[in-house]
Length: 409
Image (cartoon, rainbow, N blue to C red):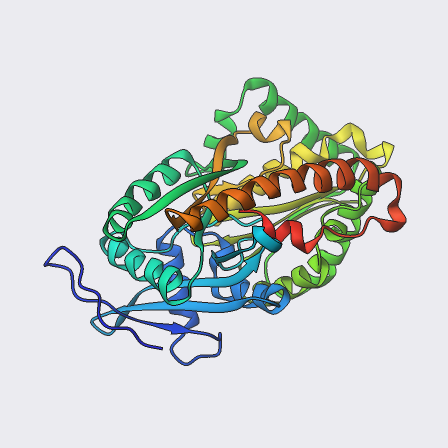
């Protein structure tokens, strides 16, 4: 489906043409082009072609795929993958367009649009979904960082004012990020003397008392086997405190991540930082690199009493930082869960918000009603049932409900 050209305000900018693609195998899509455009915007692995395609294979049921491809002078300048679905129930139903892969796998997003094309691309995107597809709203994000949130909010004001749309911000808590120096010694030098000393003491103790080896699983050889061992340790770590861990909590997570490990170990983006002692994995950090961004997904460490004296969690975290610096990464995304050692070891908490674009009147009221409904649903289902009651009834807990995951704005 093609559209007429959109003429930006600035005369110096060329006209844009765009089309909507509904499948990843469409000849108008090029994986390298997709990834290059995403990297230029500072996107994480969540917005790569392979992650998006695999995610869609696992979580696309009941949703419509809309990939907006923008061209200027025969060159692609932006590729925006979205999914359209109806969430909520009865009078609380909302038809919404969300950035692809923005749920189930805890990803944060950026609008992957060059600044010089931001206004015309957003104008076209908003009109396509709010008018042609009759959506009640579009969700950009979740976006992390006050500067990013305010920057994108300000940039959206031009397109919004032209069409009379409104912007609503919805908080999603916080995410920790760690900006990296050029070399590992500079990172260590930025830690407090206490944390720096503890790291060196713990590592020396491990090397003195065990045959301690740190390696980064990058290529295909042994990647899936190492991931399976990581998964086993991660799950046992959480089972020790009465929780099933990530692969029990999130629907289809085990198979999804197995698929990603197979795919991205071949590209060199997989970063599974493993620590072994006497030939056994004792801790590991699971993540991916994409451009100069490092995304830390999950940790794992042995919980037996004989390993607690080594500080495996913090030592493993610092090994991951070293691996990210060696790969030329400028930032590590540490996720939303709060752990004290994230800030102790250089992380900084930043707010995370979704930017909801809608229209005044009934569409805005629908969004507000759904937001109130999901807030109550989150308290009753997630905080009370899932976190407090279900752990006492493990035989009926199961993974997180799709309606809660998909329904959050």
